[in-house]
Length: 622
Image 1 (cartoon, rainbow, N blue to C red):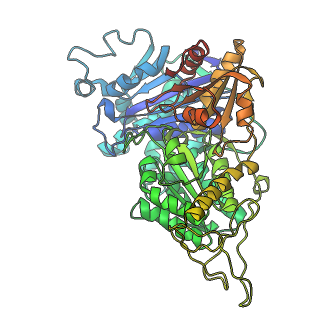
Image 2 (cartoon, one colour):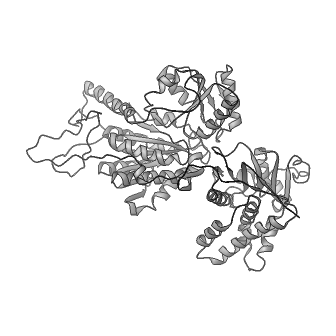
Image 3 (cartoon, rainbow, N blue to C red):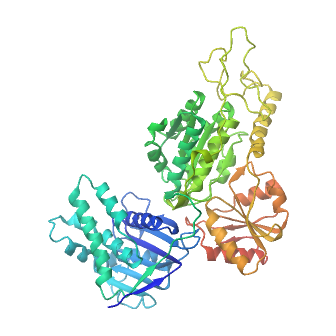
């Protein structure tokens, strides 16, 4: 039968199955191949928090969504064109995310009575047979059986055969979307270099899936997605956590300092510890501490000794680090703190994303404890913000927190990586040794930006005290003098605020400089807001978009920019934290759009919410 080849501008695919079905690997391999083909893309991996969730149940479903195309792609897609459902639970959990008329590839082996019962379908219900899927194109394949048949001559055990079935799906999707298999075959040969029979089995199943699509008469159409018009340069596909790792390595290299990373594992930040441990050749020292307090205090100690101290965690761990972060503020030492946010409170929903640690970052310590706060807007932007956080921490002798989140950490996009010469210089000066008859060293003497000098212990003539008790101005001696305390508190705050002179002014992302509404976002909502505002501009709405990377301090021109609009609208993945800061700092009646579901904004829901606010609603829960 002759096959049709249709060119499409964009496609969204969602792979879903049991958490042991390899859906994350399948999605990642499809993503890497798609990036090599030159498409723009965004991904959304979603998986259970449990290490081994109950097999076959809806809570145990793992999924990976990929949106790719020949145009600019900024979100993982509101709904998908293709849903791969490896069992009945995967279909039940994800059917609502498939657009009307979309394609379902269902593994019929996962729809037997046992699996249907585990997915809580009734005794007389089977969505593959009862008309539930009448509005979709359904391809019912016994993928498990087809996999085993393709491996029948290899003598593998049940588990090895079962674990290969995701490669059949991958091969079939490669055929449907005109993707080459070369990079995946290379990956499998490398990954299983010590188990060549497993590599051979996976490659065999991958090819079986591809050729099944080519020869089976049920698939009459395949699709071509041409290269996106990306800016010239060398690209690689990168996740937010990987980009953070490289940003930290680059800052250590540029500042010519050793980087010490003290951390305690926690989802979704742990990959940064794993990633940095591979860069010992760049002077990176990683330390897995026994708890969060040891992690942050070891990093502070490293900074005291002259290294770039870095620690990481997610919200619950940042709470445990709170007192030590106050210590870093008091010591006025450089420290980078990575908070990869997840849904809270308490341990919350570890694998789900949220932007609800903003207030914790700005205010979440005892006493007046000002820190700088930055937020990346995309996975690739995590590189820039990790580098910027290091630069600010080192040049202003202050703790700096990076607010990434689970969506950025695990999601990916093509990254046009910079050369070292493209990066801003990082200036570091240590206090010089002193002769015996020199003037006494004053550890809290400040320069014109209120920054004290970095005095490395053991340096001749600059011996000084450190600790968490209030410092006397200039000498650093312990002081309970009320006038001195007030002076030091105000100096520390002003030193943080002075950073505004060393960061870029806020720019509009799109829209006119004056109008009816400014949509002001921060962090990972960038792609959804940019796409939504772009659609509204096409419809003729007087709306503009600005997106914050720098939150403490704010860019100097932000207040003046907001005054040019009738309304300021702030969409956030929380219950309204930036909008409260904007109201209190600028006395502007900003209105919020809030989503607290552990998932990023969809473009269409954001457009509807912005329109509701522009029509007079005070706030919207999307």
